Image (tube, rainbow, N blue to C red):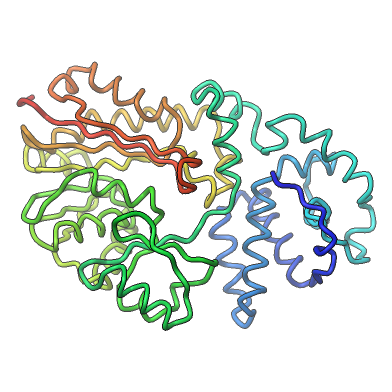
Amino acid sequence: MKQTHTEGKPSLRLHPILVKAVAQALFEVFIDERRADKVIEYALKQNPKAGSSDRAFVAETTYDIVRYFRLYIELLERQPRYMNDFWEICGIHFIVKGIALPEWREFKDLNPEKIRKQLPIVSAKRSLRESLPEWLDQLCEQELGENWETVIKALNEPARVVLRANTLKTNRDLLKKQLADEGIATEPFGDADTLVLTERRNVSQTKAFKYGLFEVQDFSSQQVAPFLQVSPGMRVVDACAGAGGKTLHLAALMQNKGSLIALDIHAWKLDELRQRTRRAGVGNVETRAIENRKTVKRLYDSADRLLLDVPCSGMGVLRRNPDTKWKLNPEYLAELRQIQQDILQNYTRIVKPGGIVVYATCSILSSENRGQVDAFLNSPVGAEFRLLREQTILPHDQGFDGFYMAALERVAEI
């Protein structure tokens, strides 16, 4: 964690209404156990007249404190239970960041000098410095080895806003110009359709978004659809489609030609996908809710390509979902691994012989990635598949999310 004690920071004026919104959000995340992104979204909706800088303060401060919550608890020296505890955690955050505390009653019990003295002592231990549960720190060190030290630092950096140009309607250069006309500055990244915002802005209110010219999608996530090597006219199944970010990318790569079936166990997510397809001008997607195993079995031996973007720990996307590390536990992780293997065992037969399956996660844990692929290939069902290629993207590689992809070819009938 970058601890800053600059002389310029104390000039920042803290507003009680905004700090109260942050404290309330933290209470809901850690006491009511609600998702941070939903809590922040609701908090901002409650204050529709707030300016962009105020909204940014609430969102960014909340996420920052969620990232370093264990460190701040250690400095607080007790487990927070009440609203005033969360006010004090906000105060500790401001002290750590070198921001002078106003003389508010909520901060009267805080001793900035003591906290500043304690900070380097507490920060000597990695699980406190980088702020994550002890068991998770040990597990990640076991699975990532010497990479873990660098990876966790990268995961504690704020996520960048990344866009994928919708090539069914525009291209990257035209999109960059359109956004510039709307006051949104971006820079191209990579050699495909990616733009990265130079500063965080709410892009969902732009005309370019409403016209379906782009999707918000991290650069690492944008690598998954091309990994399937689809082409126009193919029959493709996205079997864990969710709200369909990768489905839409596949449709663009297929140039809206062929058949693209999006499956998910949650029908409401597919409802959202249908709205997104209309905005994006996608016409080759059919959605099907998975009601039982028959939904999947009816598709056996029918697809040229199959995407299995399976449920996972989300350890590769802590930048944008920092509360994940506080909601994970060893039992839930074991359940996720079982679900991943069940999906591999029961869904892979959707591809016909010669077809390709891509198994993908937004995790950095080898037990969810290559470990699952090896377990599958060593099973009776997996005996009919071979590993073609794999790719691991770690968060410090280029500063985006952590992802894993493995392409498996079905070489004979099962």
